[in-house]
Image 1 (cartoon, rainbow, N blue to C red):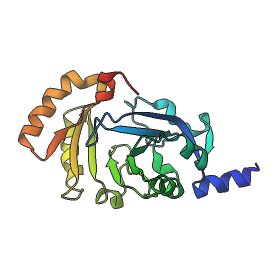
Image 2 (cartoon, helix red, strand yellow):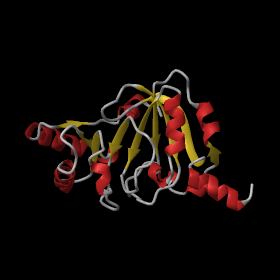
Image 3 (cartoon, rainbow, N blue to C red):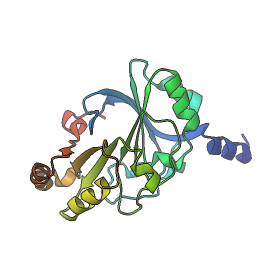
Length: 210
């Protein structure tokens, strides 16, 4: 394949860098506890210091796979396909999501919202990062807002971000994993005072599954 052809396939969204591809249980947010097939795309230009998948940041460290080949790997038992990263919206996801929905499966995305939305989504989980903020267009389309809490200032950030979302958006706080013992009691107190919010736990880590 020529470099020109390869770049065209990437631009069209027919060739995507894949870091991981697995069938498991959704561990976070609104759909926590539900079976889901995860496809983790490589590449991220946000760079959270506490990211637990830093190996996903460099897209060139992972194989580029044709969308039709990725589709073949999706477990037929699932109803939900979650596209995550990295930052999945670095890539054109129009073709990919259409093919997933043509199989009768739901398309979910976990994104920082720092890039324009592409793809057709049944569920958008927006997780804003201070290092590279979401585009305004993403806030109102988010079904779920998930704020990672590392310190007390993050509660103010959560309120600011929640105010930008629609009234129907589900609002969640999630402790950064290494600080969960310190942060969780603060989240409980915040949510008791701000009842629109809920706790998202990384239950997959407690279950010791991907």
